[in-house]
Image (cartoon, rainbow, N blue to C red; front, side):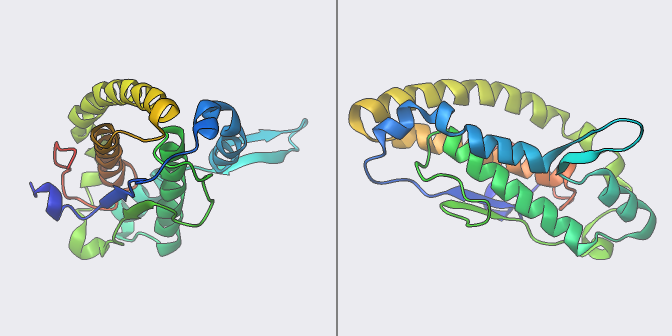
Length: 207
């Protein structure tokens, strides 16, 4: 078990030390619809058409089974698969941060903006146990249970922050740090159990 400061996956959100857009905050759920649709189009799958023909409605999503099989049988993690997972996860986080009112800049599909997510590319033969991906989801269950409770608490924190921004134009720093910590915890668990980027077990910590 490593300390939070030593964990290989690094996540932070730049605190907006300025007055935030009150109107944009008020109607955030509405103006976020287009970028949520864009995110859904690259993070899920579907098709349309009849008689065996069709067209792609959406594609992608975080790659899990492919990397698992390659790590298990060939001790490889194709770099472009890893880069896809890392880029998509960063995009997901920018949308999450926007929805959580932590940034009033509209989420970019490629620019980092104020969200920092660093996931080191693993040397599979040196850094990853080829059998561990088979049970990482099971080992992550305590984290998933904790995250369920934390996300409920974070939802209430965002509601309080929404009122605060409308009244004062500011996101209370304590609430911001808490929501950032929940998202940090989430990204560590995803990096460990679902995109298989590290075998280092995530700490139970918001730090």
